[in-house]
Image 1 (cartoon, rainbow, N blue to C red):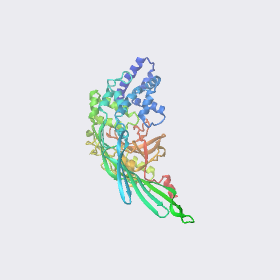
Image 2: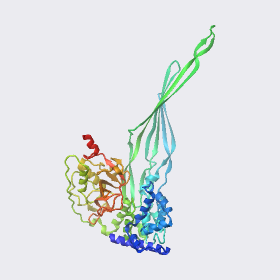
Image 3: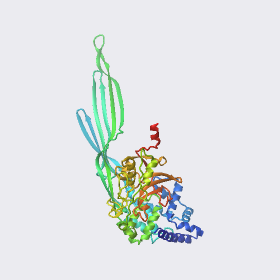
Length: 562
């Protein structure tokens, strides 16, 4: 199958590049053509962009658009000769298509309530204030990705990106694949007491002291950028929420201060002359002092509970049919997109289409084989090497969507054919070999050591929440890597280095399938590089966290025993 993909890419890219070179009378030696035919041609543009930028941009699309618009003809020619399957001059059009579908931030009115208490009374005032909803950030993960648009343009049988360019498939993608967002920001809110303030005023008029106390609460009801549903490019996403969750902040902020006023007035005791006539009055000293105290706390907040992903491939399948995109073209699309950075989830979505359309990947016809690993028994305090040995003992275990086993030892049913019951995956409802998914793998490994899961059975989001952040330079064997901030996509375990490159062990999906592991398997991969480790495609973990677990060989553990 891979050879077929390379031949298809060779034919399509070679035709477009040769046509461009011929029309422009650009001389090129024959040896350079061998570069053009490689599948990794899609990465040439990104390598050139990374060299120009010198780091990871905060907004990759905007920076890449700026870079592409600034390329000279000579630089474009160099990319042609390097074998790029992406015409960088078209990148602004791709990115414009992506940006068109992402909702802009929106200003709405936020309710504010102020309640004032005095010893004898209280009163309530209400008003509204403008508040900006960050709709763009919330919608961004579900956008129509410009890298998919670029891939569709590359495989479009009617067009070649270098020789003659037709924008038909881009316009169709814009019309048919843009997500539809259904918002609930008028339903859910975060209610914050912004100021609980006390005023104590003491006044001394020379004779007596009076004391007044006043308390004011100002509560703002922040509407939240919550979604009800997204009708996405490849799937529908339905969102559920936990309402009225008490989330008192332990880090309250106290602000204290005081002000004083001193002045003198007449009106005291009369002053008489020697004849008894009143010629004035003594001055009275008045002293007024006000003290106040303020504290802030979160009172109540609605929280995201779950995101249910239901594959919906009819939209993109319709686009494929209209443009006579064949199975070979889809295979090529998967390979081209896979060679672009940060496209793990996009590659898996395309893989879902292949799983449904290709009879050769029919999970229902797959013959399962039992999996009986030799899980090591560790006595005494665990080291990080012990944890890695345990994780490696189930290398090649089958990937299984929703697969969990939070118990000691191997599951005797691993490898046996079981129906995938968890929703949101291409294999849902089909029988494939039982194994673990990515978060289930991490939990199983840590259960062998601690008897407890990292995420309390809640998946990658819970695992992210129950660990603390570290930098990449601080990684130790056993630490976790996540594809997305907050979890929700993929998680793996840091496994050290090889040839100076960082390794992760993880239960990977269809990107790491082979002839006997239709849905993927537990693998070790290089991370954030283009190189393969023992034939395994690289992983893309970007956010690193450490579980609240101490190992016997940790420096802090050794210090505590000295």
